[in-house]
Amino acid sequence: MLDIRFIRENKELIALGAKKKHIDFDVDALIALDDKRRELLTAVEAKRAEQNAVSEKILAASPSEKVTMIADMKELKDSLQAQEDELKEILKQWQLLMVSVPNIPDMSVPEGKDDTDNMELRTWGDTPKFPFEPKSHIDLMLAHDMVDFDRGTKVAGFRGYFLKNDGVKLQFALWNFVQDFFAKKGATASPEEKRVNSWTPMVVPSLVRREPFMGTGYLPQSEEDLYKTQDGEYLSGTAEVATMAYYMDEVLDKSQLPIKMLAFSPAFRREAGSHGKDTKGLIRVHEFYKLEQVVLCEASHAESVKYHEEVTTNAEEIMQALGIPYRIVVNCGGDLGLGQVKKYDIEAWVPAEKKYRETHSASYFHDFQTRRLNIRYKDEDGKMKFVHSLNNTALSGRPMIALIENFQQEDGSIKIPDVLVPYMGGQTIIKKN
RNA sequence: GGAGGAGUGGCAGAGUGGUCGAAUGCACCUGUCUUGAAAACAGGAGUCUGGGCAACUGGACCGUGAGUUCGAAUCUCACCUCCUCCGCCA
Image (cartoon, rainbow, N blue to C red; front, side, top):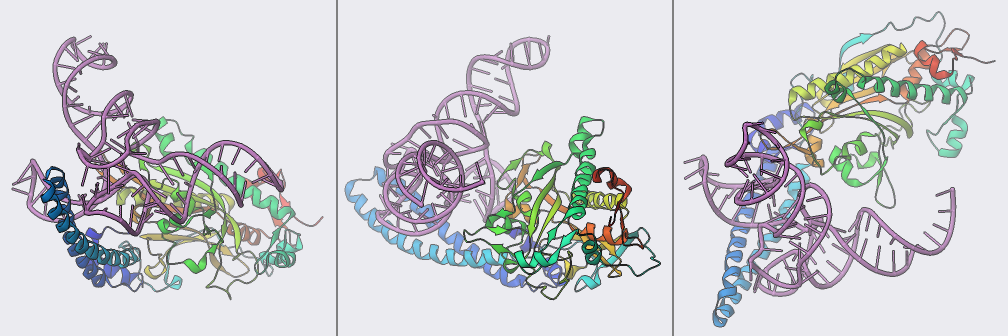
């Protein structure tokens, strides 16, 4: 959500931003409605002021005066009631429009319609040249009994799976490696550096109430992508939702910022719009686990940009330590969500598909989310401000897929990257005995 | 699933129809005192929003929403959240 005053003062900017994001939004309609809202509000407030003034006088009035005053007030009350009802109706429409105002993309975001227009910024690592036809993670994992898709669909339905044996071992090795990677971040010398660099590890709910989804911007737009319970909660597709809402309706102390949270949770996605895509394997599943970086920082564009680069670098360092070739793309306007100002995707090389596939998504929002979630802090000058928020994946299930395919050997075995060997209990290779 | 209780400012907590944006305490800020601090004393201070260059001023906010009333933190109803006890399950 954006500030209505900002919208009024920058309507061209909003319109251009919406166009760049390929989102259909009529700013003028919102402003016309807001004019009406203001006009009614002023009228209602004037009547309330009169009501308040007379109310005070009634106490001191003589009995006969009281009777006429109360009669007058009854009349005022009726006309006030009518206007209040009208205002309420307008406010309803107004709020609906307000939550659909897209945030303005950064100047540096390239023009484009969808993910095919995303722009490659850099690549890392050499894509492996196999002297044989590389197998997919599906074939490799099945060959080593690391996964069971047949029983997965029997038990859980379409896109269901069981992870097994070395599949489990490798997955847990990755979680532990990444946890340790972030735990080392706080270990620098000075207390201030330690405070700024530390990440708080968290396990967060994925069964979450409606408000956090509204606050993070997943609702009301993406209702059909979410699973909903009979009690009205939703299952979140990322730990971002609960983690962002952790400080909902709170006033933070400026000295706490930045707040860095490393949040783990199961993630659920209906994949309603992608029934035909990635129907096999672990690339696109309804249920997986995810470790997410979430940062709250001071309300400054420079700070947002700084931490956006930082959370991206963190993910890159992990991929580099694992030795998985990847590239960074900057997402084009049409591939940005409603609230996102700018987004980088990290895409790992997937040999079986001979292309890069998204494994991480790093975006910043300015105060778009925190305005909705009502997360504020008091600035030096005593002014309340909404903090800025950003997030990036730390690890999901997908890098394991890339790892398995990139580290496959001609005999079908899978080499374990050196950094993971200690987390695999010394195991250096996955192969049939 | 059943029975009760509670939600008020940063925190604790009073307030049961008008004089209440709200006592009091703690925390906070500013003065006096002090070499400095603490203590003591005096004063100040909520958030959102409209108008005004400003001083200032209108409105809203006591979990949320509806209602009763000339007037609601206070009365009624619904919902949300939390707590206690019983039951059931882990």
